[in-house]
Length: 158
Image 1: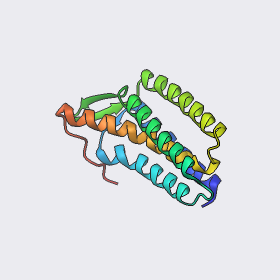
Image 2 (image 1 turned 180 degrees about the vertical axis):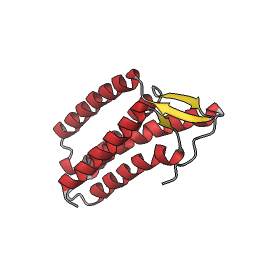
Image 3 (image 1 turned 30 degrees about the vertical axis):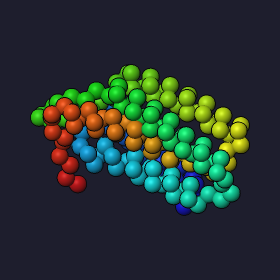
Image 4 (image 1 turned 90 degrees about the horizontal axis):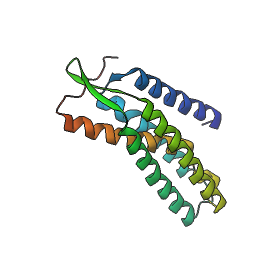
């Protein structure tokens, strides 16, 4: 797939998710987990096709995945999860965006360090990084939803 087209698709998915969550939306399991899993899948596919990666590259990838999920969990803890119309809803808050900016800076610093230490550029698919961050967020929000005792919203009819 053309890298520019892929980058465009990823950007559109990320913007749509953020805009919907900024406005507030019913919290259903499919919408919570589908976007991050799609992005992780695309990123893993890009990583699978990368050539010339060594053991050290995979160590950096694993560390980056752990960092991304962790930062996503922190961001997920700042999302307002509430009941509306008898089901769970979620909304991004100002704190969510503050954590998002901090997470981006930490991730950029990590990527710069990894690059300086010799990590192969193809071992850092952007889709994978964004996807694991959203996955960490989904895990935190999903866990909070499960413990709330409020039902998740049903899937929308398409």
